[in-house]
Image (tube, rainbow over all chains, first blue to last red; front, side, top):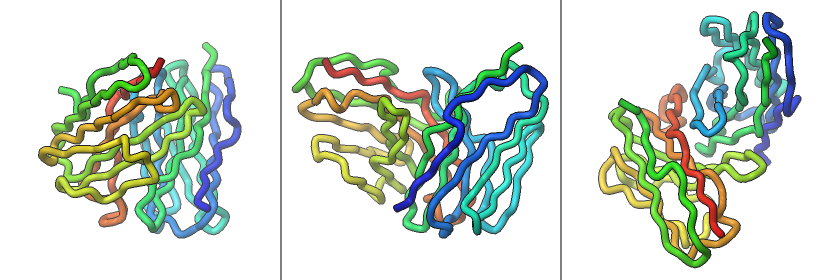
Length: 111
Length: 117
């Protein structure tokens, strides 16, 4: 069964701290892994996409790593800001062309 | 100039009614999707179309029927609405079908919140 788990479900951090969000997935036969951001009442915005052959991707303050053998990905947000408050979802594309989503990490950055 | 737009944003209706949600993308993408996000926030794929052809059809009641008049549009029609259909429905698109290039980001619409009373 292809499952994606994100822990913790929710977290609050003071502004300026670094954020570390974890995603784990069963079945290491993946094509890629994406991290999305979802704001309340809005759609999802793709943040980073890591191909199965890659170990990490970086964009500005965001860095995502991928360890297929252990079935894990980590999204790292440096020097968090109140504007980073959102729900972050991890999605894994499996070989059967199905994109499996986690439930998300709900993040609140406290000014 | 919204990339993926869906209408309506909110839809409140009675059980048993038939309703449609429309989606349009102006990105020139070949593949479009419908996802359902339930009350527990799980996102699950319902359908995927590639160049107007149905590619993915998950275990969805046949009361749900997607229609793609052209590759820029993918509409979702729901017959005989039930209470359990209440959810947020997201349309999305990607340049190619996931897996073909294994490097295709998804672009999502802002969602349609369906409430069945």
